[in-house]
Image 1: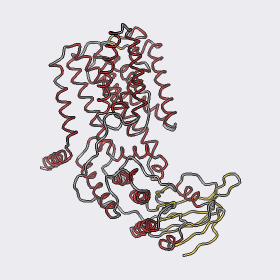
Image 2: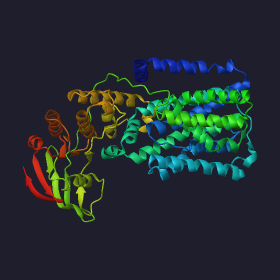
Image 3: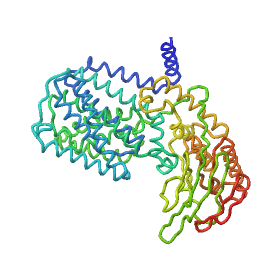
Length: 549
């Protein structure tokens, strides 16, 4: 009975979330499944090849659109899968695909671990070099794919069988994209893409998130490569040059990097452009290589002009009704600074600074510009190491001095991303499989977040970039509290605020104190200081010069 109840609940959730976009997508896949009944065998083989390309591009799209990782090595990961599939061909159909996926993921993991610290442009350049190195290796070392002659692969499934398998792989990749995009993992990854410093201040493991995204994105690429060589009947190293990586990247940007079906749409556009290039070449008596050079130029123009948006835009997920989730209250763990010291050359940022912040209290740091207030917050948050002394705490979250929200995330998504570490069933695998407990917890967490936002009159489903600055700063406070950290480090929450807006921020700070959080606040507005402070610490030149209750 429990299983039946869970299935019934899942069916109700699917029905509630169903919309026109979903109907169109399901109908498109249903119609596509009938293609082998309509087209000739050679055309079905071409369609299957295109679908394998779409599956690989969908894996890339997750890293690009959600993670902000402009990888130009996806073709290399397809090649890794192809090599693996070539050497395992003849054993079965699925074993080479599984092995190819795992081999490609291992290669992507190694590349990501080396490149993840690079800025976006550096990441793109480094992965492009990887694509060239893999291509050179395939043509130079005959063991991989038989050198320039290629390596014959035993015959397996029919073209129709490959087509249906490729369609299923593309659908699974798109479903995985959709599941992970709005999962706690996906929201944190998108937050780090929008504003890395703010994500790190909330305790998000930014590098681990990005490495995981890059590794997951290579799984469909490896599987597609292993299956595509079975379809072609030969492992041809000429098929896995750097242009393949560029083509996959262009497909993602043309179709839409942030949408689960964007890569499929981009593949269709690519196919139409390829047909157009061949037609133009035929009419003008231009060689195929030259007409496809025109195609490459068109792709480059499309990439530059469309940017990250593409043709297909992601839809907004509607909230599901549920009882608010009861999250655990922050434990009563104080923050203690003991004789902190920090110098930047001749500038003293902190000089023997010692104090404690207790849960359920507000301590305010005041002092002139350059007195060390923000530097002390950074020391306490672990953003920079102290030259002397030590910090002890049971968990902190920090808001930055500048307004720093995640522009593409809605207000409710801010709180869901911030609270991900407090979830019991929000792990990567549960989110991917959409288990009953994960779905129930998703709904409860969203209901809780909406209740918090409603209390402070913040619109739940509006992207943060569209909110007024004062509302964004309140959202920063609420997101820091949503992490569950017992101590919140708040840097100038009323900077640039009107008296009314400053009073609202002060109300939020007092409410967080009453909820059990300890707050260390840097603030210049003395009217606000008087209304929120349980204790005031005055700084000058990095030293504590006065403490008052």
